[in-house]
Length: 232
Picture 1 (tube, one colour):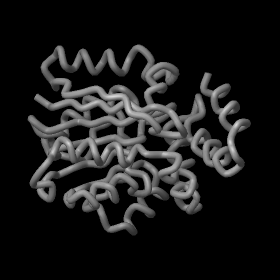
Picture 2 (cartoon, helix red, strand yellow):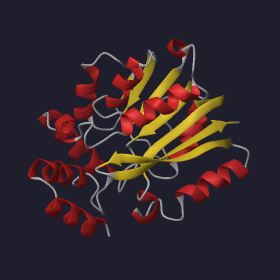
Picture 3 (spheres, one colour):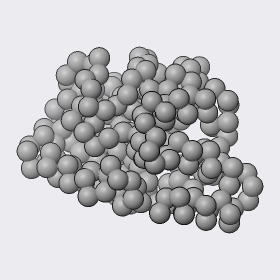
Picture 4 (spheres, helix red, strand yellow):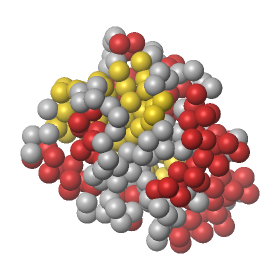
């Protein structure tokens, strides 16, 4: 399904949009290892094309993520400690900074992405790490909020990473995931698994659901979904 949809979009789009979609799809091909995905993003970041390809006319995940946190934190934003997971070149960090969030760290496994993010001076700590089943070099209950905006997809962050997000988020803090809605149906890692695990974690008293919102024009005219959970 993903291959067919990608081909259909590319054939029906203007050349620049088709090229950008193709570049993005290149990071989401089925069968890629997480190391291959990180290497792809590194090269994309270093090329200088990433931010051009994923401009706001095509990709609005960072704005949706930032607005989700504005809604959650109406005041005292400068003191809210946030981890931007799959931070990329710092799109979300920039949007958060504009809205008064000044205490933001970045995590991304692609060195080329973090190199670009570092130049924006919107992050404190930068972690070149995968978000997966492995324990991060981060203490328990470190962050007021952990957020993924655009880091979910084929070969990207696995379901099991939810456990680690909960571990490093303070009790009462938020875990926010912003992703393409259709990935819930055709990314094998997430289909009939991601939301099942979310519910299992809620049933186990690890977190509680705050909201699940569908948003339009998230990425290349596709809907997005924003999950918010409060850690118990």
